[in-house]
Amino acid sequence: MSWSCRRILGDRKRWRSQAASQVPGTASIWNTRLKWRVFLLKPAKSFTFWRARRNPALVTKGLLAGLGGFLVESIFATMSLDMPKPKRFDILTIFPGMFGCYLDESMIKRAQARKLLDLRVHDLRDWTTDKHHKVDDRPFGGGPGMLLKVEPIYRALKDFKALKSKAKKRPYVILLSPRGTRFTHAVGKRLAKHDRLVLICGRYEGVDQRVTDQLVDEEISIGDYVLTGGELPAMVVLDSVSRFVPGVVGKEASIVEESHSREGFIEYPHYTRPEVFAPKRGVKWPVPAVLLSGDHKKVEDWRVEQSRKLSHVKDVPSHVASPKL
Image (cartoon, rainbow, N blue to C red):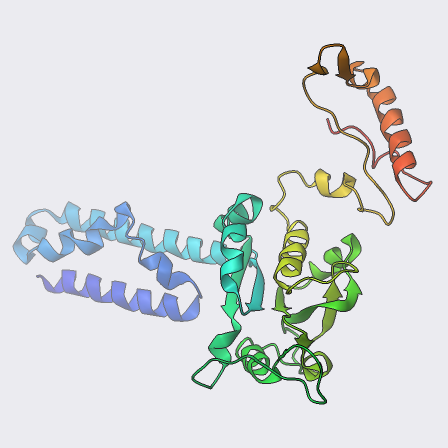
């Protein structure tokens, strides 16, 4: 290999190491092996000094291709820095298998594929120290049931860098508990402002109170009833909060106009084809005629009126119930 070709390859390695150290995410871009980089990978190794002298145009072409590749890769690296980070959810549970089917379907799956959501399910037993991976124990003072221990939860949050501290950027830690704050549309919108959420799924009789007092930012309940664990509430919170992430829901207008977008507001009824459904002879279930009239003003007035009948508030704004054109 000629001295000039060796120098070109050496410069390429030096550029790669410098870019990877200065610009996060560049290292992966360097490994894409784009087609216009062929000069730096294959032809340069096969060139000999006498061939380069006989055809200097090849060297010039190769230099231009290499320089162009470097500039394009630098642009891609800069663009990657401007892309918003996906919203991250860390779910801490002793039954991680319960989340498999849910996270691999529908809107949540598409959002993960588009790098809008970063969902990670962790097994609490991974932070135990005994050979039996025990995460629960009997309550002091007696009583029925078992309690989740504070030790594995503390170790997990420490690894997540989610322990309470003065750090400005720290994950927001939530314990799913029947005695927590009632989860509403407004609560979900508030939680969506955090870049990263940690959801702790309670089990058995409950969780050691020291988890609530020292490790958790907020307790959340999805209703006045008791479930066998916090896995289902965690899915509810995840689903609701994810809808506020830009791009997760196809049409953002759907979020504005849906039920509970305002306290006490219930969305108007919806109908689709067929216009008349006959489940049996002599019985017909038609669509309201106003929705088939084509008069958008009448449709809007009808929807506002229907929302007022269903809602717990009287002041239903017309723009909320306006037809989705």
